[in-house]
Length: 91
Image (tube, rainbow, N blue to C red; front, side, top):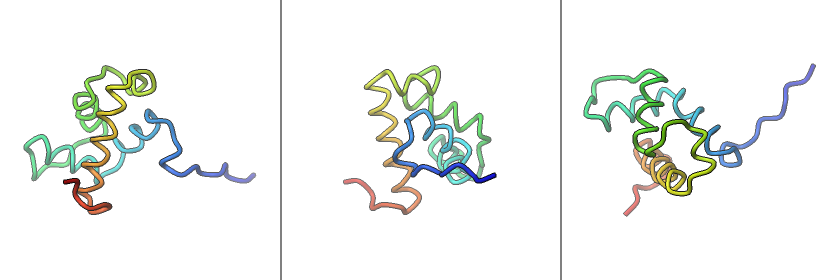
């Protein structure tokens, strides 16, 4: 049996991206640092709560239907990518 082909991260729905990010140890560290706990590592559930708070949503599914939440998620992703050194810091 062959593995299903993996889609590039940027082609996934925002809710899927959010789920993947919350399970990423680097994002968990970012969320803890941004929450004023630079010496901590958040769990996946704490990172998910941080993401929901930043995006002002109750569930990640809302990223598909609420334009303001989707914009907040895009901003959060950009800030994380800059923090992680994946892109230059936004000006």
